[in-house]
Amino acid sequence: MTSGLTHRTAPEPLRRNRDYQVWWSGAAVSNIGSCLLATAVPLLVLETSGSAGRAGLAAGAAAMAKLLGSSPAGALVDRYPRRALLLVASALQFLAAVSLLAAAVRDHIGLAHLVTAAAVEGLGYSLHTATELPLLRRIVPEEQHRSALSREQSRKATAQLAGPPLGGLLFSWSPVAPFAAATLCFLGVTGAALALRAPLGPPVRDPAPRDVPRRTTPLAGLRHVRDSPFLRYMLVWFALVNGAFAGLGLLLVVLCHDRGAAAATVGLTQAIGSAGAVAGAWACERLTARMAGARLLGAASWMLVAGTVAMAVPLDVPLVGLAYAGALFLTPAVNVSFMEYMVRTVPEHLTGRISMTMMTAARSLNWLFAMTVGAMADRWGPLVPLFALAGLFLTLACAGHARGSVRVSADLGGL
Image (cartoon, rainbow, N blue to C red):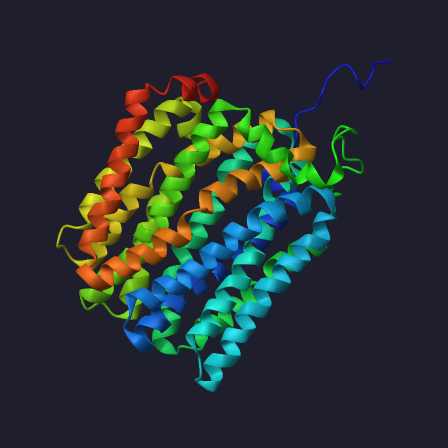
């Protein structure tokens, strides 16, 4: 008789993994809802007030909510039932969209209402995001993590590709339409949470040392990052790059608006830009298999410089989106390399806290960049903040080469 313990059967392909397909589909629909709001809210502000500063304020409120919600969300998913937390996240996003829909129907939408709704949706998004890595560890076998993480990037990039043009088209038809569509989209995570069969955790017992007070355990993720030179390096890189992206995305809308583009054309240009991330996401499994993580990080930094500078060239509006696409192309591969490192090295009972500690850093400057870029564009026009962002990307690229990426190579080189 042959023992069943002498060998391990190969896992089924991801396309046959029911739970992964359910999660991917529900999260994709919810991501489209977030993209619809991200397009419709600034368009509504520009349409009613013409102020890029107010549009930046609304975008900054969402970014601030995501920042403040990240660390608490990470602690929650490490301690409380993740299925219930997914339902709470979906409810927050749904309520935010419903409130905007009701206000749009009444044709009475104040800036304070927009800011509050954007903040509530941002909190729901943070809680949803915090579950992603812990949930993936539960429903995907270890040997398929790289492939699953690559598909997660494809899902987010595809939502960013589909959401903006859909939001622009719906807004051009009726200001109410994108908010109605977002309301339905935010039910996607609810459906996924109810349909998943696998236990989602967290582990029953928290293996934190007994001599560590329970109230301090949410800081375990921060302590882990503090003790890792590589994680500290990436914490700074993600904070600056993601903050700059918050400003760059707003500038893309402002540039298109200043050049006389209609709402539908603004959405199309955003879609062209997002196509760069989609193409990078589709290619990132091959890229991460063939390129060391440090090399990917350096190449991504220089593409950010080139793409941002190219956006300033006075070309047709859709070509501005093409320049934005070039800036985004390698970022999904950098994300996959980093997340695979996290899944491979971080204990499950700390996954939520550590991943959201990094996410908090990645979002820490988004609100500041969005508001500052909006104010600068109001005062000096969009080219001044655009070149300021290009200068920041150039500084990061040069700093990476000056440091030699030695510590980054040590950690990411084998991925």
